[in-house]
Image (cartoon, rainbow, N blue to C red; front, side, top):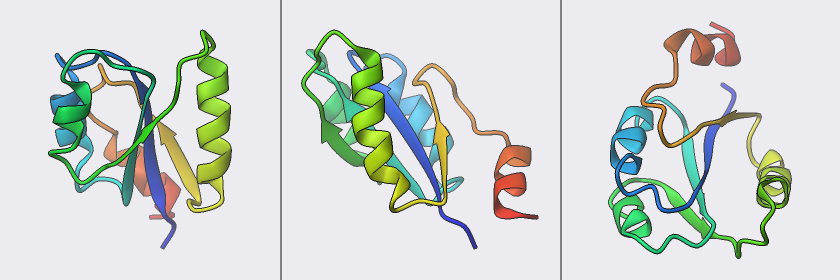
Length: 101
C-alpha cells in the first residue's frame, strides 16, 4: 500500500484547523502541519491531533515554505495531498485512486 501524507502550511488558523484535522484523521497515513508563525492557538490545537507539527520562519514567500518541506516529505511519502485548512475533507475517491483501489 502507498503512503499518503496530507501536508498543510498554516498561519493563524485556529478557527478552522481543528475541523480540518478531524476530517483528515483516519483518512490519510500521515498528517504534517507546517506552521509559518501563528500568533493564535493554531499550534496548541494541532498538538491535540496525531499530526507532525513543524515550524518554518515566514520569509514573506509561501513558495519557500512549500518547497522546503514538500521536498523533504517526498522522500518519506509516495503521495502528498496538499490541503488547505479551510477544507474539511479529502474525497474518498482521491484516496482510492492514490492507493490503487
